[in-house]
Picture 1 (cartoon, helix red, strand yellow):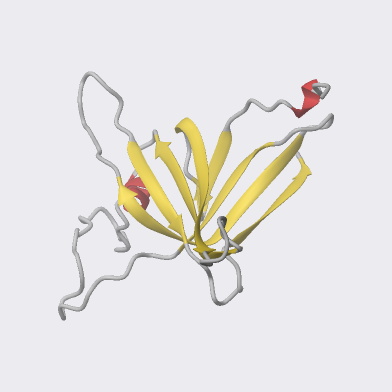
Picture 2 (cartoon, rainbow, N blue to C red; picture 1 turned 120 degrees about the horizontal axis):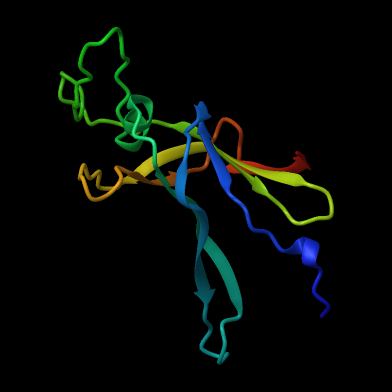
Length: 168
């Protein structure tokens, strides 16, 4: 197979959750995972059919700008800020009910292959913070905010998300 140099892509990505989240370290990783059920029959050596029992997408990235807005996203804090007052870190509500993760629309925009400069947008309609990473404050390293989002099925739009290419 001949190599088409314009199909090779090297470039950064932009992540938005309401607005651009700023600098990203080590790129953005979108991982689709599928769980397959094998239909095995006694009369056959190999599975005779396969069924997907679970499909999922994860989106992982590290934010390099620990702004107040980014910390709220990375730690899934939904409290509104008014003035210069503190933001409370709570789990659950005052009535003791279980807390529910915040549904966010997460968009990743990057470059795509082709002779013209195009961008690819991947938009997840219902991204939920699955794993907040550690946040270190040290004189020997930059402060980063690691994020892993689980992209769930959105029953309102009947999809997990969408992706498309457009001219830059």
